[in-house]
Image 1 (cartoon, rainbow, N blue to C red):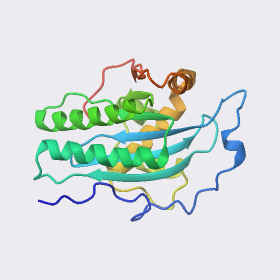
Image 2 (image 1 turned 90 degrees about the vertical axis):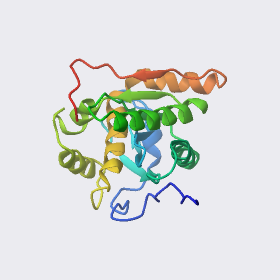
Image 3 (image 1 turned 90 degrees about the horizontal axis):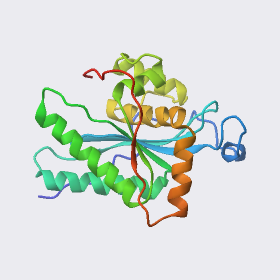
Image 4 (image 1 turned 135 degrees about the horizontal axis):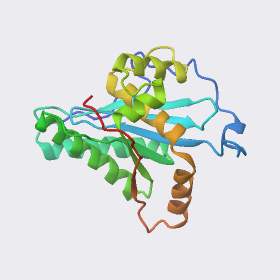
Length: 226
């Protein structure tokens, strides 16, 4: 059985970057209040569709979408083959965009054990790919991402997608929802990552032989089922 390539091009379909402002030299300069802009790869893990989105920016500054897409695997394939396809797809994104940081959605137990197991396995692959390259990884809960992007931890997918479209100044909402969720993860990380992530990134660059630790963003409430 021949498996098709896993990555959907970021510019395919309704997602367009034509409405975005061009990058400027000042975007990467230091700022006394906000620091230096970072490039974050957001990963919304899943076996069938693993959402991927790359955002560049800093708190208090305009955000830029650099790419968005989905790594897909066929449901009829063996689990080992599917995880390998996810790894290959994520490696391709890492090669192309070379992010400073990776943000992955934190997996919570659900009633459907099979679904949560697949999500957890895809999440582990994403963390492995990043850590192998010395890229710091942080896990964010769904409610944390919703609160960061919309102001409400109980926002639905439509509200999250609408705010992502607005914040990134896109011509159309990113589709499918997994892609929009990946962008929301990256935005959340940029706004909430803070100085700790900049220090972690600097340590990773100066000590390439020492893998960075996977950080879990602090939470102050019980996570509800999404």
